[in-house]
Length: 89
Picture 1: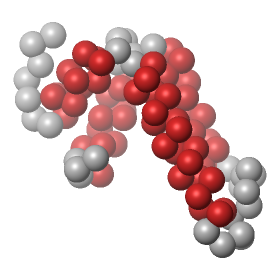
Picture 2 (picture 1 turned 45 degrees about the vertical axis):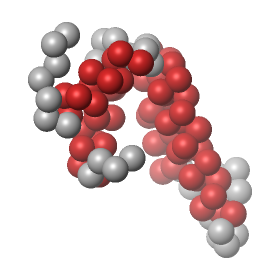
Picture 3 (picture 1 turned 135 degrees about the vertical axis):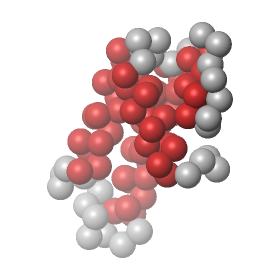
Picture 4 (picture 1 turned 180 degrees about the vertical axis):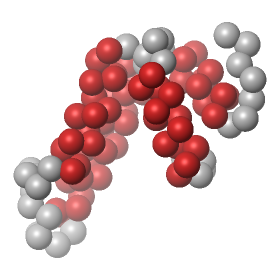
């Protein structure tokens, strides 16, 4: 979580393009973005605090599902690459 935002975005893009990431995880990524961009929410945004909390909940659940579905070695290799390392795979 200590990575700069640009590195996080690069990591997400590489995960989306990597053939080692399961299709189920790749489907979750744009689904979360569509939900966050959609004006339709579980709890409307005009309700103070709760309106934004449902967006955060969906974001963190989506991230958790993507990481849970993706093999650990794929995540580690991609993180190593975006942090400036050279992957051996």
